[in-house]
Length: 508
Image (cartoon, rainbow, N blue to C red; front, side, top):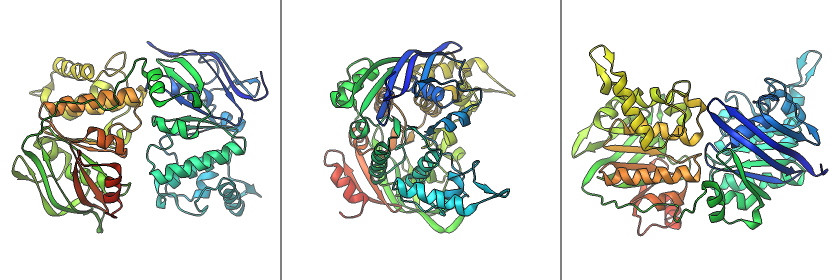
C-alpha cells in the first residue's frame, strides 16, 4: 500500500438480520485529504463509520480495513481503542456535558493527574493550546451550556483533536449551524488539512462538498457507486449518482390553490415557562390559508421554534395575543389541546422530541392516535396495524417490518415515521420544523411531494427551514422572524434571498 494511503477499506460487507448494510465496499483515503462521503439515508454511510470508529468491532463484518498499512482489528466495545489509535468521530448529535467547562469536556475521562489528583492547570493549559493551534474561537473555561451550537461544535472538534487524531470523521457537522458558523468550520477544516489531519466529511448539504472536499465517494443501497475528485463532479451529477436516476427539479411543482384563511395568529407574546422575565415570542402575527404552505424564515435564535412550539402548547406561556382556527378563537395549553383542535407538529429534533427510539415503528406511528383504535377497554390491534401500514406505505418507510425499533432506522426513515404518526391524526394545520434536516436529497424530494399532496387536499402547512432555497422553493408565502417577532411577510413571487435576509437581520 502506498505510504500516502491512511485508510484502505477492502471489500467490506456488513449484514444485519434481513438487511445487507454494506456490500463489498472498497475505498482508499489519502493522508491529509478531506474525503466526502455521501448517499441517501440508509446507503451505508453510518455503518461504515461505525466500523472505522469501533462501534462494530473486528469479526462482525467481512473484508479488511487497513489503517496506516496495518489491519484494523478493533476489539468488542472498542471505541476507546479506535480513539487511542487516532480515529475520532464528531457525531451529528453533540455528546458534551452542558454543565461542565470546555476544558472539562475536552479531557473528560482522560484528565492529566499529578500525585493522584487531577492537574486542572494542565487541563486548561492543554485545552487552550489545542484551541489556539486550530483557531477555535472559544474559551477553555467557558461553561458549555452558555455557548451557541456553533461553538459547541468547535468543542466537539477540540475534544477529538485532544486525542491526537489522525483521522477525523465529521457526521453532518453543519446541520444546526448558521452560515457564519459554517464558514468558520470550513476555515478550521482547512487548518486541519494543513496539519496533515485526514477528514471524512458526511453531509446532505451537497454544496459543502464543493467548498471543502478533495474527493467524494458515493454509496447507494450499501454499495459503492463511485469515487471521483470533487473537481470532476457537479451537483446534478452527484445527485444522479446518489439516487440512481435523474432528478429534473429539486422542488417539485405542486398544484396548490390556497383558499380562505384557515389559521391566524395575532400579536402573540409568550414568556419562558421557567423564567417569566424572559420573553420568547415578542409579537408574532401571520395568516395561513387553507391548502397553503407558509414558510417561516429567520436566523438561528430568531424565535421560530419557540413560536411554533408555543402554538402547539408545549413551550411558552402566552401573555398576549389571539389564535383563531376556522374563524374561531382557540386556547392551547398542551399538545393534547392542539391535537384535539387539529394541529400537529413535526418537531425540530426527531430523536429527542419526535420518537420513542426503543419502540417499534408501529408503536411510534400509532402512539398519539390510540383513541382511533380504542374499543371499550382494549385496542383493536388489527385496525392499528392496518392504519400504520397504510401510513408506512404512503411514505415509503424502508424497513423489513413495522416491528423494527426506530433507533435502527436511518435518519430519513426516522423522519418519515414522525411525519406518518402526525398524518394519521388527520390534521387541519401541520407544523413542520426543519422537516428535511439531516435528510438525504432523495428523501427530501419525497417529503416535498408529500407536502404538495397534503396542501392540495386542503391541509394548511407551516414550514420552518434554515435553508433559504427550501423556503423559496416550497412556500406560497414567507414570514420572516427577528428577535421573537414577525418582521414581515412576503409572497413567494416577490421574495428573494436578499429580501429575506434583510428582514431577518432587520436592515430592511
